[in-house]
Length: 341
Image (tube, rainbow, N blue to C red; front, side, top):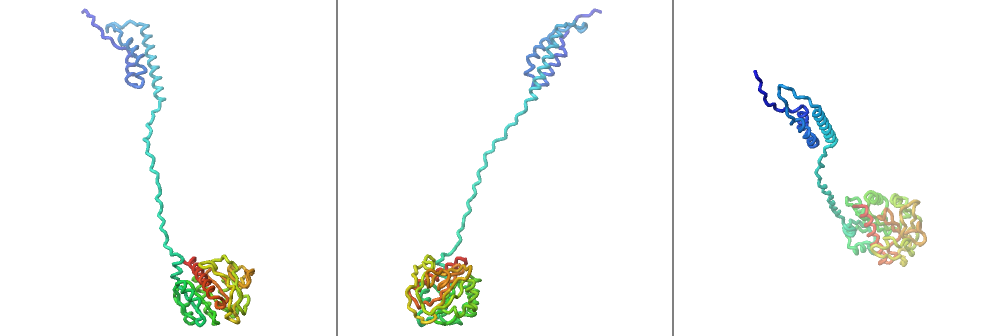
């Protein structure tokens, strides 16, 4: 039987398949190995084959070229893979957030506290007055009328005075003008002291007889005030301001010293006061200009809410006394409202 030689289809070598597979499976190295792989494929894949019946003759030159091309392709592929592994993927930066709107605090609205003007409070003050000079002139009452103030005036009725002191009325100012040698004493000062100390009431006392009751129930009040009896005197004399800048002599009037006197009372006209050791009281007026702690006849204490006067009004000029008493009333009430809302 004769055999007819058939044309043999060329078969690519293993190197051809290896390079092709590497080219497909490693897309990162495609561009690196492309040129070298094409050269190897041209050599390895396009060499004509021999008939199946006869193995192709070994060509050492071609084998060397194939091996060299394969090694070069693998080396380039490894380098490409190493370079790719060193390149870290870069994360896209987070979207830029717009800056938060600045929080501007809303200013707190300050609601003004409704407070009455001191003059309005004085105009509506509750004032209780004892005054025992109906036959020689009610100078304290006249002063209150001149200030257009409302008040409860009991005259010299001691019973009515005590009744009002013990009432439920919260008196802003209590006035004791005991000049006509009547005596507000004893239990009256128990109630008055209670009003001053516990209720912050204002108090103005005019009296000539402290020497007769100084060791009685009034002593609690005078001790807390910081004053005591020094001695009595018989006849009125000139009175000088010991501190001419004090509000009692300047608000609301410019009160002048009581230089001129008439000596209405001819005996036991008044008493001298002196300060207790460590006292917070102030002697405002006295018979001697250079004596600041004794021989006083006007004293202020309890932070200006209380005034003691130990001379008689009617020994001096009425106009001067009324100016001074208007200042007494104004300043004691002002001090009262400074501590009582």
